[in-house]
Image 1 (cartoon, rainbow, N blue to C red):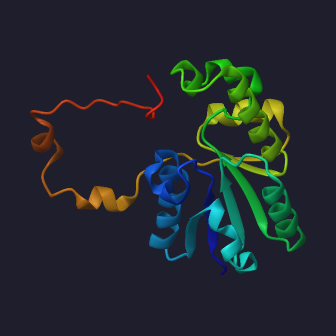
Image 2: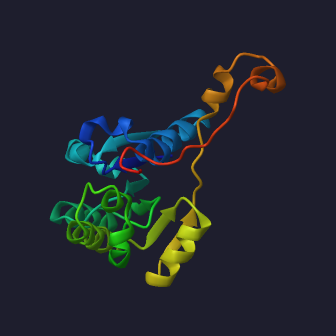
Length: 189
């Protein structure tokens, strides 16, 4: 069976591993496939021209913004009958929500620039007929604005993380610890 390729469009470029979203949506799923005996790769979009894409059965583009290069690649992949998916883990493709974006709220981006980015995400989304998202709520929101084949793929950490923990009971490990969930990225306040 041909491998699956995960393509990150992280703004961190080749350092996409430092982007939590890219880890959860590209690197960890590739690791999981490999642990199950499948073949998978993860790359940054800037590296895509260096690969023979016809060696892949399925290519998943994580958080793409529209560009002529993306349009050209998707067109080529569809002509070769390679399954193309877009992956979103946030409502980035809704220009009407630009003023509520984390970057705008943190005063790291203007509303007009956030709208421009959202329109490019939306235009990229429309290149695909297969979409995967990280939550049921995101799937519902997407279904209302774009008719496509939607699949929910939840974020999860690799099993190797759990295996790295020493064999100590959870009660013993947690008896003097407080567990907190602090979601978000560096631009969230």
